Image (cartoon, rainbow, N blue to C red; front, top):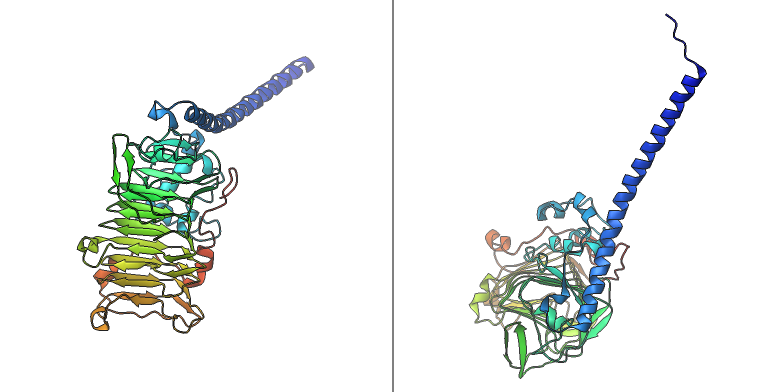
Length: 449
């Protein structure tokens, strides 16, 4: 049987097919636009929340919740691998922005880092790897650089942010220099995140982390800190008290745990740049740029304070630069992993200690000074060889330049070095690349940091 179709019938079929294809294309395009709209709307939501938060900071001083805004992370990011655990993130060596630095490669490859700031909390490694800071709280936007009243700080100031009882991820509205009248006494579960702006804490008191836990300090210039004290200072919404004289450290860690100090630039303070004492532990000091200072890092309160025997600290990917003299770090009692740092300057020594600390130096680059009497990396402080001969200090894969030498000691007990091991060391030949971004980064929204 032969089928015949009129030309009118064929024309009608073609019209219907074209209409169907056109309608389907419109629907597909609308769905695509809808997805883009949701992403843009989430970014606008972040911006609007920040603006709303900032305006409240300038207009009200009654409600302490006014500077804490809801999580602004994009809904679109939920389709990505946000549930990666720490091990998975750190093993992604192939996912690199070119440095191979596992902490940086965890977040710096993301052009939209400014809308996913809290992912930083998943990137710590070393003994401070579990420091989550304010990850589980809201954002707090610092809008006011002043520190007029350490007892009754204004909303919108850094001091008002750090004393709150709840977790907070603290960011800054704009570039600012914050000169603190008295110590900035932090509360638990706080992140100070200076990315995207130029923030200096300088020319006054600096940061105190005392008897608390879970703190991240990232992306801040801290310098020219001075002794302060003999004054009343608030440490929480419900408590203030008398503070005696502080030494003038950039960051003082006292009886605290789960601390991550990352990508800061520190210099020229009255006492230490980072001190961790009185039973502090679970600390990572990483990616910082240290310059122009005498006693750089102190780890351990005194030879007689035996509670510091449990201290575990990771010193990783830092650049110890021009104008440094000693204590990079100076250790007592505990377990210290010094890994993949770049030492380009010291006057007296780089790594020292007393009271039988365990020091595991791996994959560092030590460039000795020209002084022929200062070539030794290590110094046992006020201790005879008959005593320190048994301390477990080792150099493994370190690059020793310009006559630098490391004096090892101890029997190399496996269990002892296991407690002073916190991450896999990379080759010392890679140190220049691993530490190339040390210090405060020049981060701008919409680009790789």
